[in-house]
Length: 388
Ligand SMILES: C[S@@+](CC[C@H](N)C(=O)[O-])C[C@H]1O[C@@H](n2cnc3c(N)ncnc32)[C@H](O)[C@@H]1O
Image (cartoon, rainbow, N blue to C red; front, side):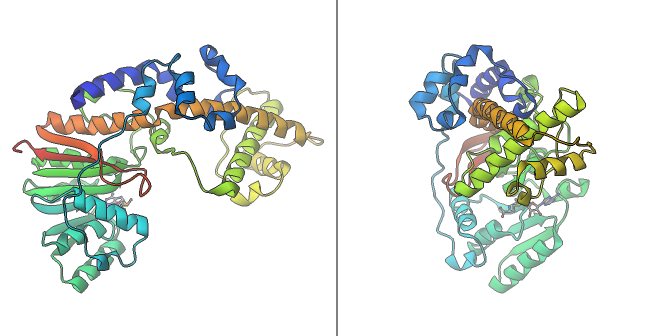
């Protein structure tokens, strides 16, 4: 079996080679950017979205050799080794959240007192505390800490809360060697910071499920591992959002409104290019959803107002809407290509964290802790100081 580092190098090489595919911003492109894949233009966006695996492979493999296999990579599932949490602790939690907590707590068994990083109300830590483990929760929001403390008093648990900013210098004091540090869905910089502090403190075990990779303070992603720095992909927050762009579901109405919004935005873009004579994409801020239940002219007037653009009389709205609809097909085809890289890019980000911990001497397992239906961010990195 390939080591994590070998996988990371192979994936880095592939992502570097095809950077022009996934770093492309479809909205800003006026024309189809891949002449070698001109054949894709024969498909409607709906046809591409509806392709089965064989159909996808036939369109991808000839142009981007090696990519399809990475798209199909599935992480193995961690075994559920721990006891079922007490059902009464689920009160006030949504079903999916409780399932995540249950599965995480069964997949990760504490080997020392628990530090839960960015704990919210401390749902996960409460499960461990109810099983006899000492738990400390670090959380920024005072009201969440107070609600967590209230629960700890109610259930008489050894569950302490520290109200602190995980990114502050002060937070370092809470990460110690004799702990099992955990973070369930702490965003971007927050879980990276835990990894850095844990490595520095030599923390016994670290188990995290990362999310929101794009929430970083820097302009570009700073790889954690030295292997990652060697292959720096210069990822921007826009690139880092790609792994989070799941195939959106949410019913026919939501999907219709999403498509309409894209058509209106692209129609407005065609209009503003014609009016200003500047052939460049002009970003328009988030718009109230109600604008997309009205007509295109209403949206375009709103957008023009936001951008300080004077609209001349007698604009042929139908013409610009038709341009927007045509461009939407192209944008959706480009998105279809970009989405090939969602999984490989997320795996790269996970492996950067894994390699960082391995470089620091940890033995690391990478897998899933829960089914995708409970959360799309279901990866778990589990690291133990190298004595196992
Ligand atoms: C997505 S929630 C996850 C909460 C919890 N781990 C869970 O799975 O239920 C992220 C948590 O991080 C907290 N947070 C955000 N920024 C923080 C910071 N700078 N320091 C500490 N906690 C922070 C938020 O208040 C929130 O409770």
